[in-house]
Image (cartoon, rainbow, N blue to C red; front, side, top):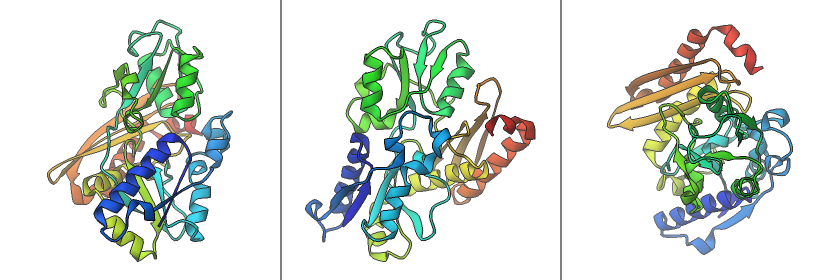
Length: 305
């Protein structure tokens, strides 16, 4: 079996976790029988411009999906927050691993928390959502674009290019460097991107053998939460050009969702808290998005263009 992945240390850590889980759950295949195939994507190669300027989330998946479609790999492993809501014909998200922490992590050198940063301090982030949320809470800060993998951003931080940055807590934990975190940002005031913290696996729709093996490691709670969050994203036409946040949690048969939309400058925002039964996960995400569209009014979205 062949797993396709990007080549960053975080992507490889995710691929290794997937390989281990497949081998443990399927007695007929060992880890040595599962090859990890590194595939370079445009999103990894072009680092001098914001994602919104060069095409958005699909830049991290296109080359991998091409190899999946033509059979060079059997599955692709992704960070769920990087996945577009529309997949190429013939592909599906067939498996979700148990979700890690969904929080954003603040890593500060000029201060240990976002609130303690001095006025005018420079914060680096490539995410429009994070930039908008920072500006919502601290409009006095100087936000600069900050792309690259985790290690690259940490080197830039240590070199003093910025006084602080924000990264996904899940990624830092998977890399074993969450000791670098100086503040874990709360989910209520700093909600995550849809899918943040969750690893997903993409396969060909007609590949029943691979899907059967993956069904043994699929985490149903994560899959349900992501169904809600991705429906929310799709209803808002979410991309790297749109500052929005969405997070679903499950308690028994109930699903709780928090969604937020913001203008890029963080000066205006709307949020909704909704709940329903887990079987209505997709509908709940869509309804939340439609409610926020109504709350905000059409002029709100002009700044997203």
